[in-house]
Image (cartoon, rainbow, N blue to C red; front, side, top):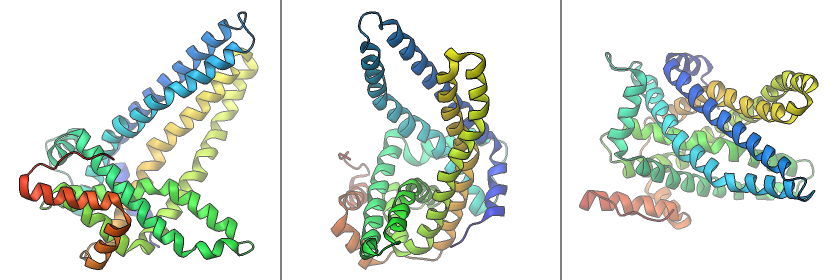
Length: 318
């Protein structure tokens, strides 16, 4: 296991413009979420005279109805900001500097546009990569399945699986970082090669991902409890604002994690992935194995071939 604390910290501090941008974007997202919750709460409360259970129905519908919108914003629009940040981190990790005379945010955005042409293509590549990573991790998970029945060990294996789920994002974004660096490969070939190299070196990379994922899981509740104290204070002074204050503590602890911790863990993971796979070449046996167990990997291969022959791959369902 390798964690580059000093180097990752230095890189993150050099991406201050992106940290500020992330702060603005995630704060706006949190404020809009808080406004939505507040309006839904007031509407539900206003319907109480009609029927005592009607507010709960309205709150439930408001919560369920917001899921598709929240997921779209989180996984699509917010991902564009992260992609530009990944491009900058990758450039700093490999070359140590960015081109002069252009803003960091503009340069990151240009790299995303130049490499992927359209945000829908970027999102599609990411979804396919995530699908392959899940298949790889599923294969490794089966190796440890016999441990689940061992007293005292089964619980640890389950905990590791939960942490593994939260660490997935760092692996797919590390493969995205490779995509920005390997400009001599088309985006589909780079993604295909990236997941194969991950499969070949999964032990070193996944160990680091698990540690970083565990740190990420631990830090969020710590931030929440730090913000909970002033939130409860607001509730004591103005009882009507107690619930909104607690929700605000939840949202803004998530914002702090997304703005401060996530870039650091991301930089660490990118460094580990790039350094581990630096001198590796894709293994044909692993390619065959992944093609046999992962539909998403077969789609990556198909798109690589389509791009090589026609220049434009067909759109596939994910």
